[in-house]
Length: 195
Image (cartoon, rainbow, N blue to C red):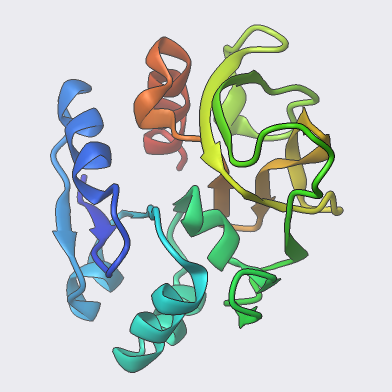
């Protein structure tokens, strides 16, 4: 099986690659459209600023490539946000795969960004098969995807939001499965096993 991790100017690519290696799975980190198109699975990770990331993707026409993919695609963290319609971060038009908006957590006295472990609930995707209810995963983010018809998992931090989304062959998680211990490993395995 071939897995491509999309390389662009957003961090976190190597930690995802290492997490797959721990599962005995090798992946190629690439921005080569041909390699991405021909891979069996695609992972679209990211940590960084939405506007700068989208600019990089557009300059290389990776924006068009990503939205045209037919194999299973997994967005992680910024990858989830960029797959939505729009982000308040830098007033950024995103890829529009998921019909929802990315917003800054409101200022309520609770610390932003959310950094650390939080639970996920209301599973509606094969990504979460085999997990106990209210499993804990690791988050680092200041922006969140609003709840929508494509929400496949919910988390509550200041307000309920989409900690995972799914539409057709596109899957995405706001948290970091590569930093979420056994739960994260299960999620990555479930993605790898999607037919």
